[in-house]
Length: 579
Image (cartoon, rainbow, N blue to C red; front, side, top):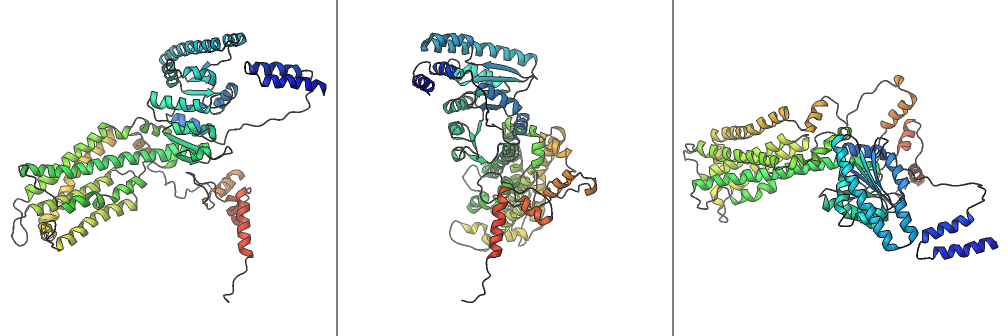
């Protein structure tokens, strides 16, 4: 006891010292940690979640650069990088650590200014030499992977404005970056460095309160609901239950959303440019007098009713390939990284066909109706021609959207047919009444006069066909000669069954017991959890449904509550109906 008391006094003094605290603690520990007999030991397993290495490998194949920002020490961080397939035995590692002989000698002298100068100079030289070596390695052997590893103490000096350029340059050349022993502030600084310095789209994912600053500094923040609490989830843009769900979030839903947004934005540009240019050509016939070509209600309801619903369906349901193929070919994600579908070239193509179609809509209807007349013998006037042209515009732009869809469902057909039908329903009602407001008498009975002529039906068929012929020819040649990556995948799997259809598997007799059990589980009904706010559902009640089918499946914790609730419902007495 006396020996412990004397040692404890030295330990308290070392722990409360302001200078060289770690060194003094190590010296005090050496006084007592000797001549000991090991009786037993315990350890805590720091295990990765299921599917993390496969997820990171898939994301790397998709062209996404992975950075690990952790508070663990360097040895642990490197082991995690090996476990996550970020680093392998063939990877060339550039390590910048504060545990060098030069820095230790400066620490032994005890001068803080000298220590800071030595560390900064060491980091400066290391960054400069590693950057030159990485560039040579990239030019000589571009297929070799490079990894950059730095600890938090050296990172503090590397983030200095004078060294920040070399740090960013070396990090962008390397395939993976590992920053260990970093503080929450340093995580946010590194994220901001990539976001602002490299002008890259950044995504941060974390599961604890120490990741909140990093999550908020990135363009997109992902929170994992785990054992670390809900702080990261509450500060994030999206929340998932496990890290491996990041594959579905990015490669499936993220890529689909990118395609849908690009298609919706470019289509909005196309259909409004087509509609506007049609009126622009009319101004040449009026001498720029300001005379309108379309009725005011036509212009007001064009984007609100007549062309609105199909765009919503595309934004909700359009997908180029299935979810399974998106994960099978992660390279498809690189189309979004290269911004393939939202370049000026794509916008120029849409603009060209809008220009071409507007000429067809105006000049074909105007020229063809010069000698046209109604059933009463009167020559067709301006409002007859404008109503006919507007009808062709509504029909054509809605059909053009179907041509650009990768997957067409019954909702697409319903929306396109409903939009065209909404226009005819509106014009039937609008032309059947006459009011003194807003010069509505201009289009009174116009549609009925047009529909009494064969000329209207012929125009309604020929003009959209001529207008869409150029688009059809372009899409055919593009898919044949210059296909996108997803179009190649579509052709490869065009004969595959639908992912939601029942796939006929081999007979039970040819399956092993483990395969038969997996097949039986896959055929069980699923029930989605209603108690999570995450992007993906938790597993269903497999063991509960399996018991109903006579399949042996291990029970899950959530099944206990399920069986208890059902048992309680069965034990409740039935009411007789008497009051």
